[in-house]
Length: 319
Ligand code: NDP
Image 1: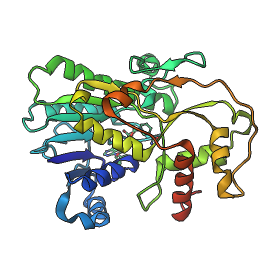
Image 2: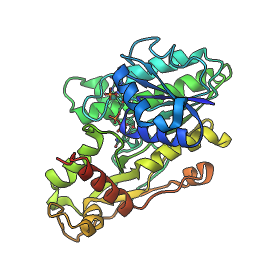
Image 3: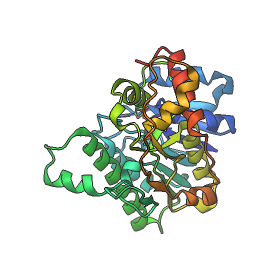
Image 4: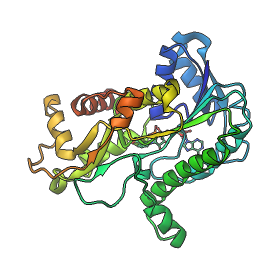
């Protein structure tokens, strides 16, 4: 069967494309230019003509995806402006939902949401689950749209996009040929398949080694997932019948930057700080639903952060 992956040249999407091809799927990727499409084709040349691309220059335009979704069996909507330039996230969700309304071939749609659509100001030690929604940023944005920092706008955009998908799905599911799955990954670590600079993984490098949060290394920094596991979760979401109509919290666990530094010491890189051993209480993610319904398993934090740094070093892309 044929799967559409939007934003196919992205950090996460390339891993999804790779895993789909390895499992024998036909893949159609949307990209913003034919040069990006040709680059992917070339990268996966050993899979013959199993990868094709469709140029969608502006994903926010109404009807942008009409051509791209024609004839596909499933859609993985991962494209989103990240992390600082978020404009268009919500509009693209609206656009693809509209294009999907009349599709007769698509059986499943998987939307890559974010843990930012889950997170909320809770006391440390809180147990997050699929029933949590972060509506704080969305509310603030309606009150003072021009005064909020970029991160808040990104949070709001991801929450509103995921809500848009669910709202449409709940209202129309009796007439739709497809069902919906949403995934809410937190910080994505792991090796990069792109050649060029990558904003997502560089953010992690910058955060850990440039901003060097030395006085807060033991504090709860958030949750993480390895990009290979996140991609795998997208494939499982396509394949598991029982995933239809479900939202999944997917994470390898909570982390502090101290945990990351500890895991990286064996690489013997001088820039990697030792930090201090102090440790906060961590929030607890309840990921049992993804474990039981998807059968998802995870790399360890050590494997994930070491592979990230090694991959960035190999590309000279660690500054
Ligand atoms: P990348 O920045 O690596 O890739 C984003 C993709 O979206 C690229 O293909 C990019 O195209 C495309 N894109 C961005 N803006 C536009 C636009 N205005 N029009 C058309 N295409 C656009 O992102 P990631 O792989 O890191 O993220 C993938 C998904 O995962 C996103 O939905 C993100 O919100 C989510 N996510 C990511 C996390 C992370 O830590 N990275 C954490 C949680 C969720 P181009 O290359 O041409 O710019």
